[in-house]
Length: 369
Image 1: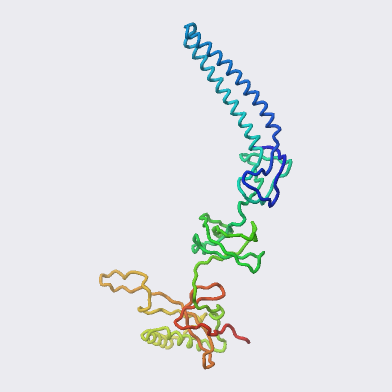
Image 2: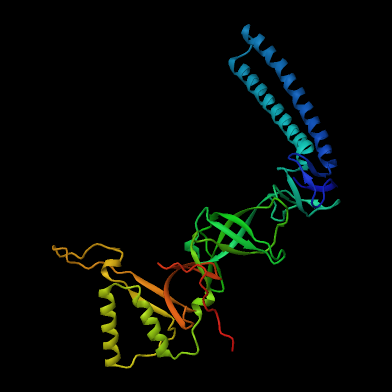
């Protein structure tokens, strides 16, 4: 309903219960309307009672045959109309009473805390059907349970699913790391400056009350998890010795790769390398510490069916494995290298997969010039 604010009973950060009165509107005009409506009810009741007496007299006359059936039905219709007018007047009176006793009091619909108050005593409040209506109170139900609306780009949104674990940090609380769980992924895209993104809803717990509404945070979605694995610093995977030439590095990396091959693969690799050197000068690779190794048929993973031919002679799909190099000082005090497969990374360390137990082995991260 619309009206002027007569009293405001709560302020910012006040705790309220469901049904508590937040503000009260002035009801002077409503009470005048109620007096008018009461008069209308009394008038309608008097007309109805008078018509009821008249109808009973008409019934008595009709029983003696002194009036026609039409006159009796006309009297009954008039009585029904007077009864309906009385019911409408009483209903209108109940509407006004409801506005005075309920709508004039703005109450809290939930248990919570008042985050925002947009009215003061003397302000005019308009009903919600008005185009100029606005929020007058903002109440949070439970600040111990909050949500993050994370904006995720279209390239990363495919790896997000409901129930996924999340880590996030806030600039206002440095040194602390919080966690949450993905609740929902909104399918409606948000396009800004030709960049498509999606909104991900994340549920978080705020038991100590350190998280406040409106804060911004940096979110990390945990896509994959591994435990009890060997880790190495990412700097070790990027290191290349400056004391060796590109050809020397290539030779050492090639020799290290032979350790991961079978006898047949080693022979094939050595022959292919010899043919490549004799046919043309090999171009310098932009990242010599990374070698792409095609595993042999005995170590490949079959990912597709055989080609149709009726004889089962189709070739199996081969898996490309990317090997990374790790440089270290061996027991003889010389620079040496090994090749390992890499797994997932947390940004600073990377999982390495190798048959050798490298725990405790010191890898070279950088050189001091």
